[in-house]
Structures are given as structure tokens and as C-alpha cells.
Length: 59
Image (cartoon, rainbow, N blue to C red):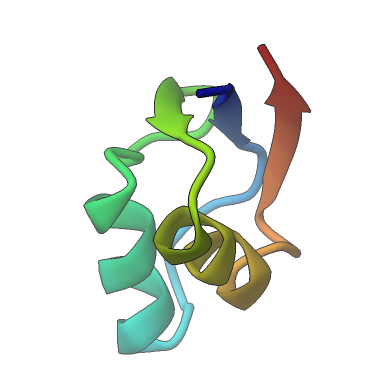
């Protein structure tokens, strides 16, 4: 199964509480932080919700 590398590119301050919670559920807390997540429907849904704050590359 493929993995996705997700990087937080914009700040979490001033964002909707649900978007902050989504970013933290992906393991992202600070700008520039990266995490690797499995490529599945749950992860894709989280990415779609906060796509304006992150960049995604396939591993």
C-alpha cells in the first residue's frame, strides 16, 4: 500500500477548531512539519478538508 507525505505549509492560528483538530490528527502541529500517512479513504478525507494548509506528495 502506498504512503503519502504530508507537510503543513500554513499556520494553524486563527483557523476553525475542526481544521486544527484535523491537522493534529494527521500529526501536524508546526509549520514545516512533515508526516507520513497511509493512502486510504480516511486520510484522503482529512487531506480534502484542510487542503489549503498542506502540501501532499506520494511516496
